[in-house]
Image (cartoon, rainbow, N blue to C red; front, side, top):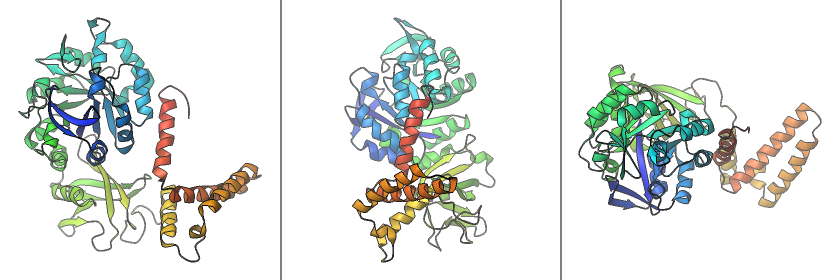
Length: 429
C-alpha cells in the first residue's frame, strides 16, 4: 500500500528536510486528503503537537471524515488516541511517548498496554524513527540510546504496524535506505511501512517486494513521483496472470457489483478518468465500464489486498453494472438501501414531475410529516404496523436530508463515530 503524508504545521501543509528545514507550504489540506484517499491511507502528522508548540487539532478534524487517515504527532495518552478514533481516525501513530518512561528511555509498556486496551492493537502504529540505527524522539532531536532492531522486536508485541523512518534521508530525495528496511523486515513479522528518502519508482518496487508498505511525502509534493505510478509499482505483478490482476467493484453500501481484470494501463486510466477501467480479455484492450451503455462506475478509491495481487474498487454506479440490465452481476435486482432511496428522492426533487408526491413536499410539510410519522411509529401496535410506519418515517426523513443537502453517508459516519467513541472505551453502542 502507498501511504501519502500530510504534515501539518502552523495550520498549513508542510514538507521539512530531515524534519527541520521547511521546503514547501500548502494550504489545501482537505483537498489533498480527498485526492490522496483514492490511492491509499493518508498519514496526517501534527508537527506542532509533536514538538510541543501547539496543536492543529481543529484543522485535522475534517480530514478524518474525508479520508482513511492514520494520525500522529503529540499523542501521549490513551484518552487522546481514543478521541481521535472517535473522530474518524483509522489508526493512531505513537512516536516519542512510546519510548520515554519518566526521565529514562525505554519502551513505555504502561502506555502501550493502555493504548491496546483502549483502541486495540490493530489500530496502533508505533513509529520507530531512527538515525544511525538508533531510535530518536522529540521531532528527531533527541537520541535515546535504543537500538532500532531490538526495540522494534519489543514494540511489535503491542502494535499491528511499525512505521520506520530513516531520519538521515527524510526529505533529502537521495534515495531510501533499502538495506535498513530489509534488515528490519526480517526482524519483525507485523505490518511494516517504510518512509524517508523514497524518490524513485524503482525504490517503491524494491520495498514492495520486501513485503512493506511505503509512505511518500516530498517525492509527491515535488511531483517527482505520481501517486498513480506509485500505486501501480506497489502491486505484486509477479503473481499476476499474464500481467492481469483481479478487480472487484463494490458500491458504498457494500454491494458487489461486478468483477473483472485489470492491468497497469487500466489502473492508470481509472485514476486519470475517475471512472473504473478494466482490461477486456474478449476485446484484448482497455475497456472503460459503460463506454457504450453510459452505465459507468465512478471511482471513489482503489485498494489492494494484503498480498497486493487483487484489487477492490469502491465506486459510485451510474446505472446498472451488469450487461443484462441487472444492478449487479451477482443478483437479479437492486438491493433497496438508504443510498438507493436517496438517489430516487434526489431525482424527484431535481426533475419535479407534476405527479410526484416527493416534489410536492415543502420544507414545512415534510417536517410536519416527520413529527406525525414518529408518533405513528411510537403508537404502532403490531409488527406490520411498525414496519409500515417506520418506512414512512424513514422516507420523510430522507426527503428532509436531501432538501438540507445532507448525505446519508454523513449520518452513518456520525453513527460510526459514536460507536467508536463508546467501543474504544469498552462501552456499547
